[in-house]
Length: 159
Image (tube, rainbow, N blue to C red; front, side, top):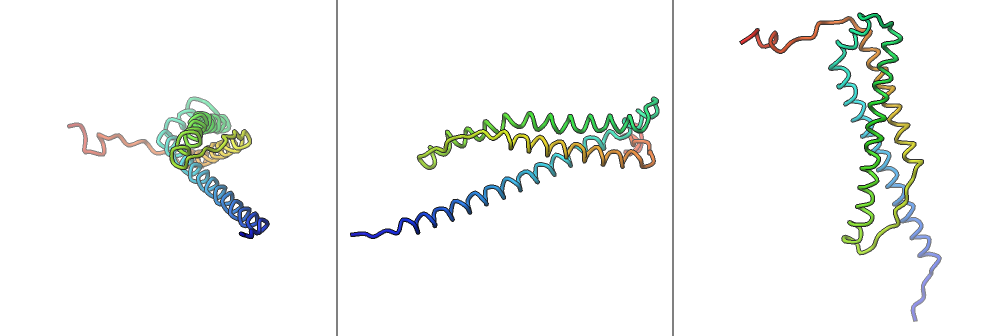
């Protein structure tokens, strides 16, 4: 006769599941931080390479406040647009993992749940990144202007 302590087994299982969910959340947070950093760097480089053209908005008569508002609109629309385009891809990849890869790899599948709160978190993070890009660009636009260098002047003239 085998004697089992079901309460002890349940405690061990709960501990394992708690650790698994904690690790999963930590990986999610790390992934979001890395994605936000990549989005910030990409957006800042994208707008920094065009800083000369944004300075022209002031030359054409827009006030500094209007130029800054334009930068905020562009940066936020870029980052929110990327997040909105990434959501269907993320949902599809989750579906593939849950319904295709798990049954093949482990012989079982998890029920797939959709979490709109997480989507709101992603959109909020994208909004913060867009506002950060706009703030960085505002700082960059306040620095003295320099003429952009052309490739031919760097290479020694026309060939």
